[in-house]
Length: 156
Image 1 (cartoon, rainbow, N blue to C red):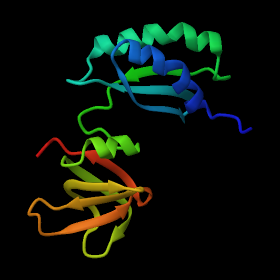
Image 2 (cartoon, rainbow, N blue to C red; image 1 turned 30 degrees about the vertical axis):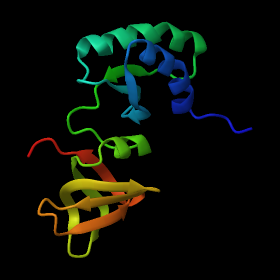
Image 3 (spheres, helix red, strand yellow; image 1 turned 180 degrees about the horizontal axis):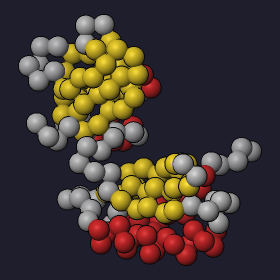
Image 4 (cartoon, helix red, strand yellow; image 1 turned 120 degrees about the horizontal axis):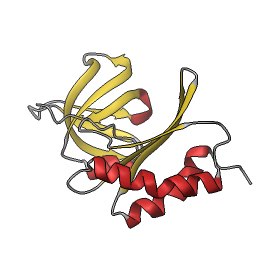
């Protein structure tokens, strides 16, 4: 049986505490920046999260993470909101935000469109994202894996 990755193990530990506090785990990232490791847990809830939600979850998971010790290096724990320009990552993110304004940055430019574009998320299936421009006249379907990022665009 394959060993679970760090993020999956942390998710199993943290998710019940988040749910008990009425929070949704948006994303978990374990990454190195410079010489330090960071465990970043992004949370959300209907109406948005505030600093108190972040603090409550951080306090609730501190001891369980220490006891289960899923990470064998020193790290900095950060619990925060995914922000207003949140990156859509999981299938359920795309499904939840069909009809929302998004901005896309491709890894490689698309002929006639370029590398960055905005529009409305009109469909998502099997890792394929369909974006329609705001005029409703032009539509493009891309593979999610070909995008550097796809984020909500709440600033128009």
